[in-house]
Length: 315
Image (cartoon, rainbow, N blue to C red; front, side, top):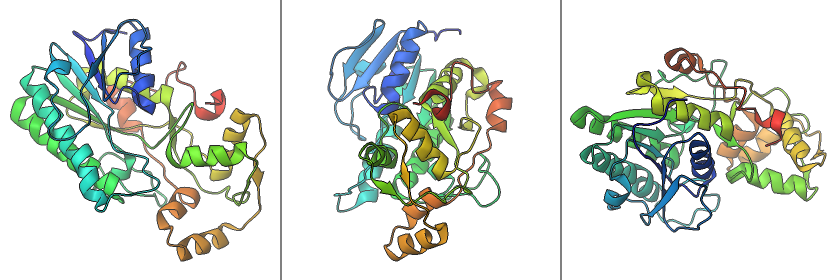
């Protein structure tokens, strides 16, 4: 694995993905700068934390960017299960859109070679219907979070065109790994507590996931691979699973057999729709498949043996 020509700045370095990426890059011999709101300490060797505060369009990145070769922008407002903002889209835009574009402008000014933006498969849409998503599809963001990510992609593309900053975008689906976030964490807690879950018959849907290891592997490839510049990449572990299979995998990780009730998916769909939970219905009952052929072909990349899947590793 070739190294970056200078330090790599990872934003959101204490987050679910950011922390794993920092550890991965440091273990591979890269010089890493960890951009954080607050410094919790405990960093591995080769990692230098830089406190930048909250992310927004006014964040000052000058110290963090000094001498940096590549930025991996993981920081974002995400996994908001109990929204309290009066205007959620405005809040997502403030952090995810304005914050990313400001970082891109400052990175270009500081002479950074490349910025890797961690977006979301939600930019493509909420679910697939017989055909996997591709990076060439027309965007169809389905939530305020996804809208803010699409607008950040568009803003960073404009920065790249105006300045020459190389921007590579990655749109991951649900990311699995130790201590997951969002709805995956909710399901994990339910299985730990032995709560009954009505998904025993949800075996026909197909949802692509990506493990932390696979995603970090692709990010590291994008850092060094010239062909990554100016491209958007979809990523997955390459083997979609049903909701039942996902819950069984989580249960295996916890050493518990999940209590799965045999409720017909059609009834679940009707109940979730009546409760106004269309998004949750899509996530639990629908398909979301991604085509990673272009990612493989452009980068000469494949999910590496080092990067095992959720269900094989129990992550």
